[in-house]
Image (cartoon, rainbow, N blue to C red):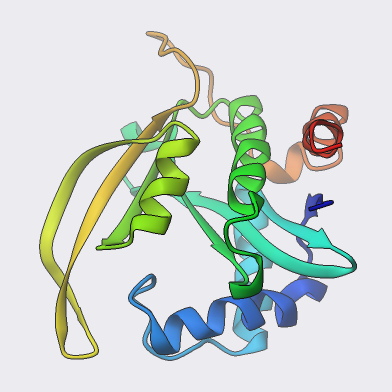
Length: 197
């Protein structure tokens, strides 16, 4: 699949919702029960993109998947760790979209001075576990029966990825809004495009 990876904008909200909405309504992949509105997705993209990357993948002019990072926890000592998520359109599963989006996201997170990425996965979900382990995540914990959706109590497993070697005096994370137009981000987006040819 020829995939173009770019930074999401609020104009992508409808396409993002078209991918995400079904997960809310008929899947345990997200703990949202009702799909958000287009306006809510626009607000999320705008808010998240101040500090973290939100990327979309396009194939043949259509958004077929997206990834983003967010704050993992509020306490200051967590600030070098980001929580990440990936969603791929149903008709684009098993085509490498999630992995390619994630690889680009990780390059940008490294440039922002993040050291760890965390992903929570509702279990069982072999496809999501497979994606995360393919890109280097390892399972580090599980919360049993931590959420209830569709009358079922659901477990959430936690996977962790070391983005770069740890240092004792890490530099402060750089908000994405200060890097989004940088050569470094342009190179990260172009690198995955070149590797897919």
